[in-house]
Length: 59
Image (cartoon, rainbow, N blue to C red):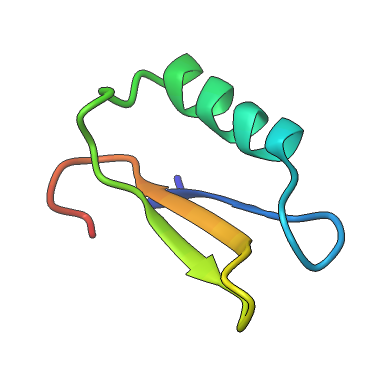
């Protein structure tokens, strides 16, 4: 089983729909809402990738 749930934008940057899908998938697998997420940003500050640990302390 992967240690994290990771989404990347289909193009270079993520869209709001892709971010919403990430949140939906995280909730489906039972990740608590207070778990921190990591984001990779482009040079222009747009989100390229988001990731959340599936278990506490796996980060």
